[in-house]
Length: 378
Image 1 (cartoon, helix red, strand yellow):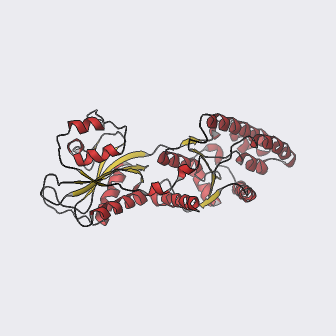
Image 2 (image 1 turned 90 degrees about the horizontal axis):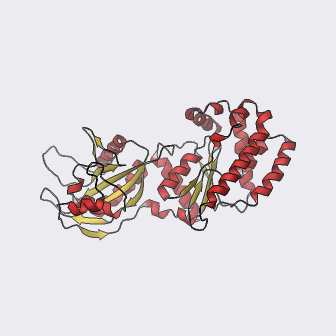
């Protein structure tokens, strides 16, 4: 999965209840367009280029997989829904809300509808000052200057006054109270996608399973009886080695880690794939290894229906997965649920994502974040 885009938006309002306008806009952006991971202080600034009431201005950082044009279309639609009316007259106008796309990663976009970086950003203190609050390591890709340099060179000497700090929904989710979160799910449930999104949004370290490098996996899907034992032993050895190596470079008491698997999955898959005598041998070896492994503070299981799993597997197009039978997926799911029931000391959160696409739909991702927040607050 590709990394999310980092988008900087500038928000402004000088009509009605300005604070409420800004707060509503931030909330809608977060729930519908992309994840708001940081917000600047709120400033009051004089109208620039026309005579009108003072503005409230701020800037936000938004994470999204959407294209720049998609973001533009959605923020323009949001402006309308929040009450903005664009009158067909020349020059600047008072407005209940204004959302400008200032940057999109470090890309340069020059189209009829969208120009980024915003061509006037370097001339507007009400854009530069809030952007400085975001503590960005960002350089203007055309001017080749960092924010502090743009601020020093700006000829806009407007009186931008601090009003107050602003809150974002993400700050309510104290995910970093945990040191180690494991996200599990059946084949095709989206655990790696969610792991990467959470890590990017909450600034966490990741531990990702190296499943594609296992030489026995394609052979197993062709002849399960023959290759089940070497496959499961290979996975166990690799997971043990990887977790040992990856976690060794982190401080489990200081670093925030999100993994897309927990080593116990080895036993779940082995119980489904191995013959009874092979499983007994495997279980003896597993128990020795499991005692040494750190346990996650939060274990998230993504449940999806078998039909949806098969559809996801088909869409991601890994050749060796295309012949996985539904019965196999159902056994794996039962194995996970049995394991979860047996682990009395494990902090478990089960999230049904059958009818949710948290990669494409921001509202579905927000649903998952709220499920996590509810679990933390219990």
